[in-house]
Image (cartoon, rainbow over all chains, first blue to last red):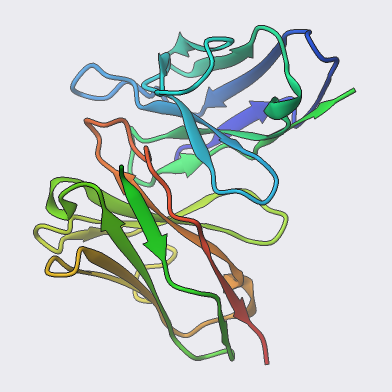
Length: 112
Length: 119
């Protein structure tokens, strides 16, 4: 299975400051169709996961534009330009290129 | 609007089976796959498997093959996930999520179903 490794696992951030989460995969996530199936999810306390980004850098409807995704191959990043209180939660990367679908361990974002 | 509504919490004994349902609305069930993802208490997300509701074809991770079965009833737009020979480490919240490669995987999620395995 493809191993997804996130860092950091804990991310204390001051309100209004930027935040960045790294996700590395053990194999390239480029699929045979040329797409890279790397998603980012946010899970607020007590809620279901919510997709933020798909295919690396496509923002889902309703997701604030302070969230952005980048990367290629095996190295990916989720950035929040200015953290707000509602961003508290756990963030997961996920690869859908290879069966078995796998997730990163999660990064817990908290307000300092 | 797209919604996935799951059945309620279950408590089962070790060795028993559990069947969780996921009812889709707001779109045609047969046009997207459904994946199941579980989350043990305080832990991360683990993919449990995928079903094509149109054909009934399923794709399961090796560690759960033989214990998981997924079915779909297109007349009621409902997908089912059955887990057999339950163990304590199957205790988790089980989520269904709409899943298609073209749609980028997991764009909509159910509310989750807590399955507790305890003697």
